[in-house]
Length: 299
Ligand code: SF4
Image (tube, rainbow, N blue to C red):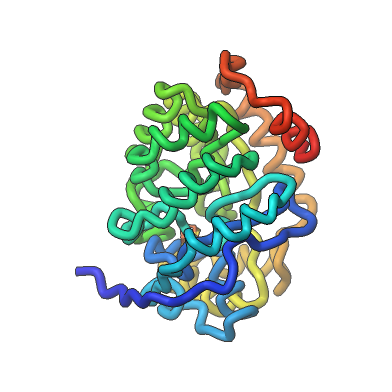
């Protein structure tokens, strides 16, 4: 029933230098994402840098960078310093990854040229790559972040219509933890009036803790200018009573009011205190000396 159109394209490079983020490089083997999260910030990138529509052009037209792994190996051969984040503008474990295995092959390239690595995904398919993640993890720091903004399936069906249910994501997280890997939950974005109640946040935190998440982080929704019309149209269709509330909270801008952010922070603090988020125990395998220098540079 999927009407996603896939197209192979050639990438000029693979590693993208990043400023002002907790990582130094980003890596995205695909453009677009059929998970179709209504709030997706990457829709804005699609409009800003590619002059594309923020709706169907993002979630129903996916580009597969067919030469991506070869380009990545060239980039890694230049010995880039710092850490890399996989999946900053697409989901690296979206369904087509099952066929193309670009993310898996990127991880294999990183095993040969280790850099501290983080992955953000909503795709349970990541468990397929536990073996290669373990190999990379023996050489450098690896964390897999599961995006689980909410565990209410009715809300998820409306806000992230193409994703796997939160239960499946958390089962995958548990499998990674049982394999000795670091895996955490990003409760992001928290959607005002939709998934920001203490009850909703508590349910997400409890499920994350029970799955063994090493951390539970949050961030309120940001509405970039490029996706405002798209997001407000979605709100008007699925949550019409929320439209006036968003107008008051965001006042036509990208961020909610500071008061809202403070109250949300307080709610999260209370919720987080009720559950345990176990940091991963120190691993017996340590990086070689040259890699230790890289890690220190990245911290
Ligand atoms: S999974 Fe991530 S990249 Fe894909 S639509 Fe959702 S937020 Fe965007």
